[in-house]
Image (cartoon, rainbow, N blue to C red; front, side):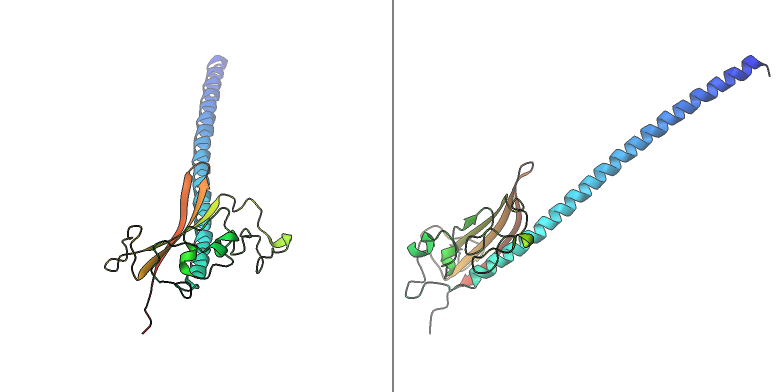
Length: 202
């Protein structure tokens, strides 16, 4: 083999090696992109799952608070057409004095609060705050919201709300935890509904 044919063969091999390298880099870049997208999706799913788990705990805690109250105020009718807290109860701006189920109708708090109005994640006991070392970052619950609705439902179909002004022996308590996501809009993270009934004294 003469020198010119050897040199041509080396040039061909060098060019082929460069193409192989470019193809390998391209494949690696595509695989890396797919891997990163998969990791991002997985992290988003994990984050969503964590939020929903926390929200469910918040909803259960708030529902327990509502259901721990009396069905109605002492000495009042069990069939008021307007379900809302009384003047003294509403005046505090908190749930501290709420003592019957209909007081909770219309509760709306962003960020979520305990009965004394202390933001969740910072609350201690009976309106106090916990030590700063044990508090969540202030922005953690900033976009979260508690919502409570209390309304009468049909006695023949407990899933059917009654029109305003109608009453029955059954009230539904609907608790929602939502989050206002800047990219995805308002997300319902948890929702719990229970029906409570009035049993007239014998």
